[in-house]
Length: 121
Image (cartoon, rainbow, N blue to C red; front, side, top):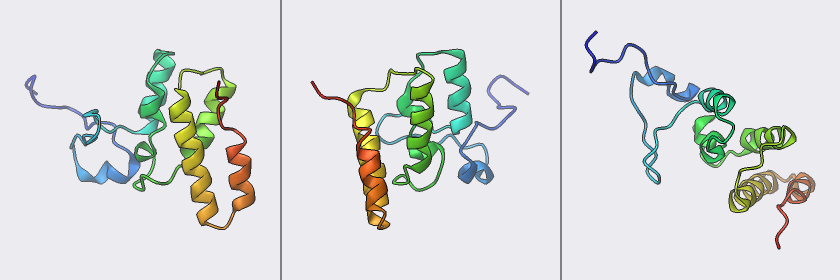
């Protein structure tokens, strides 16, 4: 192939895999949307890789308000001493997941999630 042609599709999230070699751009940041596995590989190769991209719900699911896996993934990363997610991003992730649980009637679990709120000083 010539240099301008791609020989493989971008690592898109599973819900976009059948759409062809299309680079999905994020409207807010202009960064291309990639699969969570791609972001995990980037984090493995660069310990200071941007966690906001990795924990973006759209890299996992088509529902941008579904924070389940993102929150659990953040908790695993935190246990592995990845601490460079801003307190604001942590707070947004915690409150989004708590709101999602509360809307499903699981308010006890929403309280549990909110207990993980970052310390404010």
